[in-house]
Length: 256
Image 1 (cartoon, helix red, strand yellow):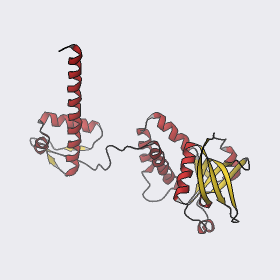
Image 2 (image 1 turned 135 degrees about the vertical axis):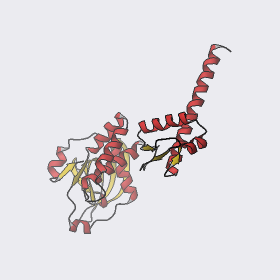
Image 3 (image 1 turned 45 degrees about the vertical axis):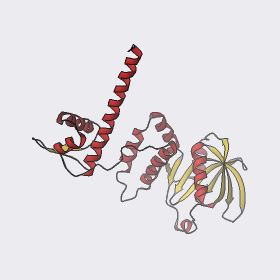
Image 4 (image 1 turned 120 degrees about the vertical axis):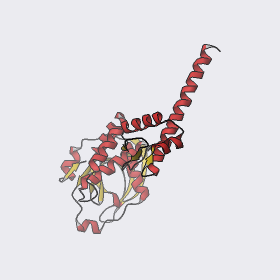
């Protein structure tokens, strides 16, 4: 057997060993989650491993953050305390952005119930992402602003935006691509415009686009629920100074 064959064989055996350990670790986690309490002897039998190997696996799980409790003594037991969650959550970039921003928006609304841990949850999620992704999410957050709740009069005239319109607006906003919209004014006039969704503003429950309007060659604000049709363009746009919009449209908001 030549040296290359030996190296290939060693690498293959290492991979097989690693794959078996990963599979065993997943099985152990599944077993711990399936019951409130396990005897170590039962876990050993299920996994076909020695007491020493089991103890090593449990120690490594604790180091990874799993809240595993053990009873001392011969024949002792183990339990996985209060862990709710998922091990592998595969999210694409858009899903990551939407998740973090949704938590940030809910946190900004300052609901008196069920939001006490949102900041901590958002920060943990944020820190779990790669540095480049954190930078991108942070930049997008700076383009979302939260204002006061809409007045009762405004809410009475509010209608839920069309799903396709909402999707196109989100895509245009996140990708920084121009957006063609068919807009209905308060006076029921219909206009077609090409806009840049520079910033968005929430006066709960009404969302606004703070945009650069190509037709007017100036800043404009558009209520999302008044946008009837949309089409995302391939033309990209660059961000304009936020102060243009803050001074003109939003006296009572803060960036999330």
